[in-house]
Length: 294
Image (cartoon, rainbow, N blue to C red; front, top):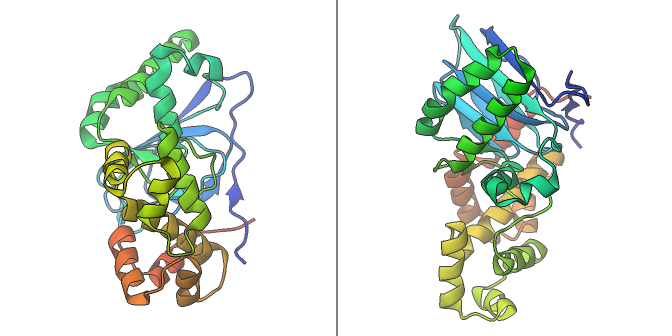
């Protein structure tokens, strides 16, 4: 069993709305960690740095903006291929999850922010065009001295981010056990069914019968609401459980794959490589190297 991941204690007090940390650095030396605060992290001039969020392991480009909106989602950035003496700019904004309370988020004007936070429970990154558009606002927040106006600017930043297109979710839902949130009751019902039955040979017909839809109709419905087909959703759930076991146990890759519903190891290895960009063994090794400690 793996050691616990560092639980960071941040300087954000209960009386603060948020805190901004602006720094220049030449290396990423903070371990994989979790903390109760939500976090918006902007990084510039760090091409080749490795980002780990849940079971997502990726190299970032020269500009990065990520939002983590969960208290238990492991995340961290590491030097990886970013070496030398380049100066990296990093601006981190940490804020309380209840900064925008539930009643306020239910208002129509805040609906898009609520949807963004729901996705960010699994970590999200924003596309370059969105980053370019909000970069100035992030720099302004890092230098704003007037507390009241900084809060207004922060709300404006969150709103603009929530309106942008191309936001991408990072971690698998089944890797990070957050309360599952969907914009469709039928999608929620199907996903919960798959989460409960992913270890066996579950079929599209079964899922369709569950929500009163034909196989063709359900397939189209899932594609419309999630952007993925039935098999992709099922495989993502299985891969999330595989990733979690690779991190938390010492079971063999084959044993983990079979326990997670993959009955063809060659097919499993191909799917894992395609989705994660590395083999299961490489994934386990990368995670173990990311400075886990109590």
